[in-house]
Amino acid sequence: MSLPQYYGENLASPGVRQPSGLLHFDAYGLVQAQLSFAIDSDPLNVADALEYYSGGVDHPDDLGFTLKSYKGTITAQVGNYSIIAVDYMGINRANGYTDAQITGPANTTAQPTETHPNFTKITDDTISENILAGTPDNPRNNAIFALAPPQPNGVPQFTFAGFGVSNSPTAAPNKKAGIRQFLRPMVCVRGQIFFDSANGFRSAAMVQGVGRTLNGTGDLFTLITPNDAIGALSPEICLLTNAVPEPIGKPDNYCAIKVTYDIMIGGQIGWDTDIYGKMEDPIF
Image (cartoon, rainbow, N blue to C red; front, side):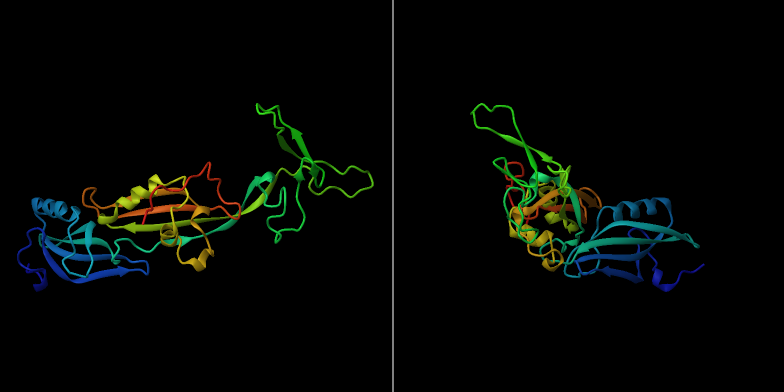
């Protein structure tokens, strides 16, 4: 049985490139390609092809950036030859990493009443012009402040014990009675970004930065983009809470590292710098 002319005659690994191919790209800079090669179905030749293409070889065409092989499929054909379809991946950005692709669900989470912006004084009059609980010397809304055990420095300390019921049988019920938490608006940004092999160290920087706020605007504008999606932000209210790296390709010659991450926005109060420090170095 004769082979079609384009299959070629020398089917030893790495094979003969076939006319068809596929190039898939997105708006974030990630490019994936597929090429097919005809190879001899001799087991030793197939084994050589497997080793060759799984090692992270460059795409044969110069597209202005590097595409490396990372997986493929081999389909046996009639006539003692096979077609190997090789998948490549690369990043079409001069800086070596894709634009971040994000989602930013805004929801609410239960927080202690003491953390409300207007607990002691008005700091956000867009919520209300009324103080929520006040101070031990001037409680509002039947707020209860319990005296804490004596402190070594002798300064009295108090804890918030909730809101009491109305103090008169004829008064309207206290709507705040028993309330110990409130639903605080919270935005958590989930994103993913790909790094090429020259920028894989940035993945480690993200992993090591979990539990800290972003170092500066360079990290902010790279990991949360576009600004229109979430609104105006500043680095000190952006806490990196999760980073999951996923190397793609042979470990010592990978084509990319994909990092999925979460950033929690601290809101008006922000994050306590005594608890959540800033990243020592920028990621970008």
